[in-house]
Image 1 (spheres, rainbow, N blue to C red):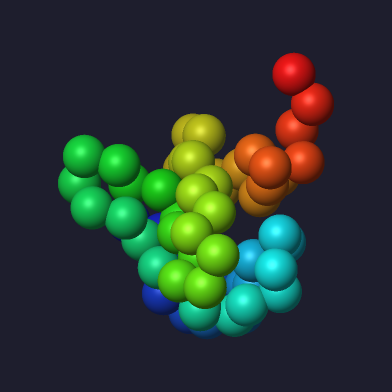
Image 2 (tube, rainbow, N blue to C red):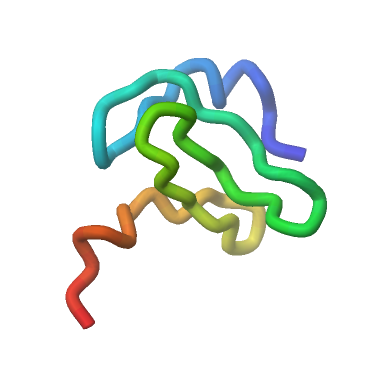
Length: 56
């Protein structure tokens, strides 16, 4: 589980909203409550690159 005290210091890189939550057990990502952007965990560390800005 990601430490709550660290989560409270973070904000969404896509929209700047400080309300990030942890998704459910099936999708344990960080989720922005405002814009819905999801940040997956890689080896226990959230990947904070917004998918909306990643070029394919």
